[in-house]
Image (cartoon, rainbow, N blue to C red; front, side, top):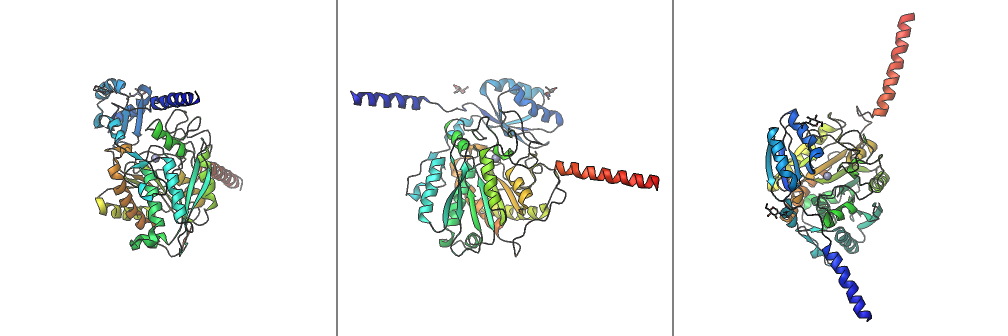
Length: 452
Ligand SMILES: *[C@@H]1O[C@H](CO)[C@@H](O)[C@H](O)[C@H]1NC(C)=O
Ligand SMILES: *[C@@H]1O[C@H](CO)[C@@H](O)[C@H](O)[C@H]1NC(C)=O
Ligand SMILES: [Zn+2]
């Protein structure tokens, strides 16, 4: 009798588990639009009021591509409207679900390091287990730190590496997986962890020298809830899983809520009620702050577009050591392209992707702690597959990006130095204060001149 019930219960449960269906994107087409005049831009900005549209690249400047998918039911209506408005349109993928189905996800088998690789994508739990096993293999050099918990209570993991014989010149922090659907980002960060911990035994002299230079911290998946959700429920999920869900990379305290964000809860770029409202952003901020004194490099990984983005994302002007960063970026670009001829574009967000944003992690790190080398990568590809990057491209992406890391992280000054105080980078608040001071001075001057 007991057995019968157990079996029945298991049967019923497995039925529910099996019948649970993840959001499918069959017949969702990926379009690329090219706005060449203001009217076109307005058309794209209006799009989400009219249709169920998911932007892969939101509208920004003129002549910058806009990538998006539209629900199959809305496609006929949309194509008619686009035609009426003289929109330049091309179809990148007719059915994005087919491309998502090709993104194989494998499991990691505990203590079998070979079962983790860069030929497939991996779930959060598998990445975590692999890291635990890596720590067991290299207990003296690699350490896992729990920096906090996500909104749904998952562990936020940092990987600390100090190799034996390391010069510990300064600190490098590498961030990945802040946007859930950008699966190549955690994949690359795990590759970089692997290359760093195995550097002493490798015959790659260039990387070995770099690996022995720094104290390393890697944050491979800073949005574990969203990452899991993009595996189990909705492949195009971007934000965290708080209620309401927030774009963690709009939740930092630089020009918070000013540009390139939304205050509507359902928006993909909802920035939250206030800066650091999100547990993930708060945990990152505390963690970074504790290591900020020696922090020389902060590198974050996103996809897609093949851009190297220099702070500040909310400005059109070039601030701080922009010129030096641009020069470094060009060298990195050259190095990356040598392997597979992958091309990158270097500049601010405004210069590259063509739109401005605020509340971005790297910008906050640079502004707050005067960290000299802050760079955001938008990894492969340039739009052919977008977030549906095929697994065959994971390893090549990792290899070429590691080439770039060698150039980026080779020290160019003898001693680590922080940036000086901000030049023209004045917050709104201090601008009000300085304007007030100027006004008072002018009034005094006026009174002096008048009554002298
Ligand atoms: C997708 O479109 C094809 C061709 O129009 C149709 O046969 C198929 O049923 C559609 N699939 C779904 C899941 O709607
Ligand atoms: C965009 O929306 C506004 C306000 O709803 C409307 O006035 C304008 O004509 C629309 N523009 C285009 C190009 O559809
Ligand atoms: Zn991103």
